[in-house]
Image (cartoon, rainbow, N blue to C red; front, side):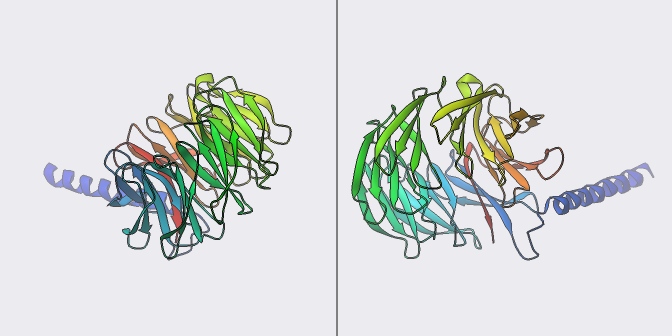
Length: 375
């Protein structure tokens, strides 16, 4: 009799668990996601060269795809149902068809690529090959390399200005920034900046670029119209990320070795506020209305919400171990955080009075990059 009761109890618990999971998934489903649409996350796993595909409505992984050693630079294509990424060890760009979860192209770009950028119309992709001191332009429809240009030594990333005219390339090994014509990839200027330049943030009006140093406590400001260095801003710590306000008015810079975040006025090129955030703030994501900034604290294992207008910190959200890369889904309802040490993807509901962790989705080993696609 007791065995029969235990069986019924286990069955009841399973049913209740399934109903609870369904209820969470329904609650989490964004209002814009009409029936028949899919909301997927794509996580690059550096240890085994795979891509984990996670369904954000079902809250579970649905596929693991081999993409190539050292996956990096994941980006959702702006107009095609594709995810693009790079194999930094293999020297190629890869293209994933999101409807089939199949790799449909591998495009040789040169040794050690790390990031990809797209033109606003989605017709071209740009990749800097760090090991080849080169930059390539790819036609996204034919997946053919249609232009090649020379950069400085160790080009880290290439970023296109919003007007589509200039490609800004950070050359890590010779402390310069290359400005290339976006159409022909011909050199327009080479500008000396702070040591080992890495990340680039370009203002929406295409007038200036802010470039982080990988080894010094500086961010360089480059005038893209006059093609000159305006300033090397002293930060008091090495910049970990550049997060630009959508209107371009402020730049937020997490500085892990200073345990906080600096705010730069992009009009005056001056460092303004400094906020103490935690142990090791390394990255962040702004909401679409720029009201809230979610900062990853990799040392503390949590996310720190910051109300930007009043510079006020809210209660941290505990996630997995070593959170770095984060991304909001379209509309800003869900915040996704890649936890590099615990090998999971944290799913946080943000459209509530108090943001909260919904679940952790298991992914591959040593995850790093992240992309989201609705289709």
